[in-house]
Length: 210
Image (spheres, rainbow, N blue to C red):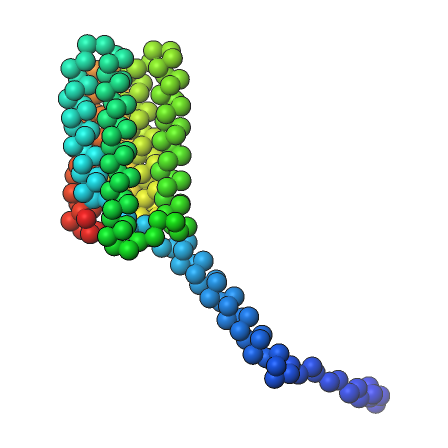
């Protein structure tokens, strides 16, 4: 029987100076991984309940005032003003709630929530202009409800469950606005941006800290 000649294999042993450095580097990498994982799975809890209720009241008032307008341009103007007021109230309410609960608004979860919500709203603004340019006012309620619902649903993926449910309900109202006669459009807008927004806001205020 032939035997392979023995070879003297010497395994490198880290010096005492190198070992702590290696362990420290690994610990830093582990902590970085944990922080990133927590950022990806964290929940955006600064969704304003009281602010959402205020937005709902603005929506109800907007629906009533818009219904009194003699022209379609007047109707559109009322809803655009109501949307601007509601959006401003929502942003202010988020900042106040975040400050009150010591929540950071510059983290990854906050950015994900903002992008998920704002992107469909920006698309809605562009589509609204396109519809206005061709006089397609009847299509606006369905588009607004669907895109706002989409934004709330996508943003809600980084928030509490009730936000996602609210987004789905907004989308259902959008489908109803498309499926029913155009004369019902203002009613569906009041139901969504008014009643639904108000109820959702009160629920969040009660269950999720204001």
